[in-house]
Image (cartoon, rainbow, N blue to C red; front, side, top):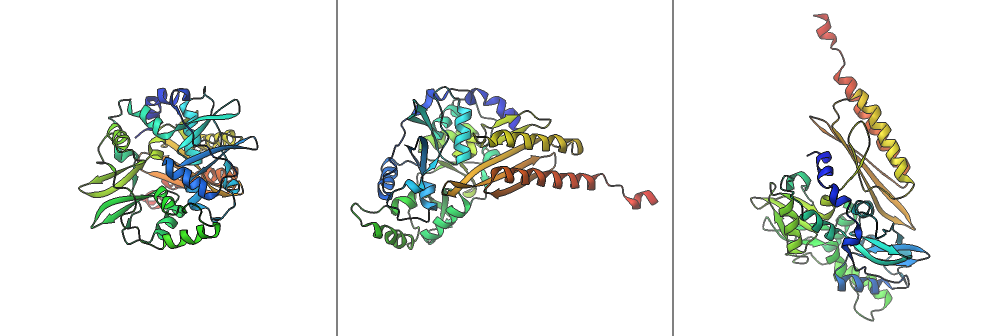
Length: 382
């Protein structure tokens, strides 16, 4: 599947103004306690909450709360982290960059320095569903061989898997079939402390709860599709079931999973280069220009010695951090006629991680090219 063709197909969605799909933002205050924030998220069945703090737009998500080792703060101020914002005149492409880079499900929209709403991934999917996407199939975009658990798995193990693997969905297997799907939201909801619980009791309740087994916890409201079903079928089934995932199965056997992120990855940023270059999760800061320059130069150099390259895709994710210091994951997928080459690195300095990935793909592919064109001494002696 060529992203070049999909990029052209999705250009009208990418260029749509966000003002057409702004929805209500779930707002909190920096002084809120952990219990108040958890209540807010559970009662609204949300994923991200936002606030304005010290002239910055801040956010906190279900994933942040699950990953936090600090389960007993007097307020959630220490858990908040800054997030780029949109204006009403920005387009969907910029919203997708914010959502995919920061691994959230909604991007805040600001007017006169106040949060007036959000652009949700779900509403972007609705725009995509209005197009004819019958030529894009589920097996072209799904995440294959998803991690699974069974009903006897302790919730603490499920939580650790989600935190370590950095995802929010775990299919639960019962009698060789998926019976339900456990999400990060469900783990957070069962850890919700009751009203007026003492601050010290929150952590103990969380510990006791996570010692229990998964069982039937999660949702059995599941969107499903077959590997050859098209993107319209996938998106429509997710919207109809009101889920953030779609299970891809063949003859009752789970083949993969499709989430919001997999679909939003189709709305990539395309850069000018001798090789078609697409970036998913482009940061909206000074690092953006640095990343563009480094990968454009690397691919221009690589294309001279490896002319078979068809397409390059760069994925940039901001992972969980401490004290506003974040971990970044940068991966590069290089497509050639016969193989898919993947290079990835993780670190705290995005510029340094980008350097490492660019150097790795240059060194690796350049060496393989030399091996391809090396003369055979045995043949020369004949």
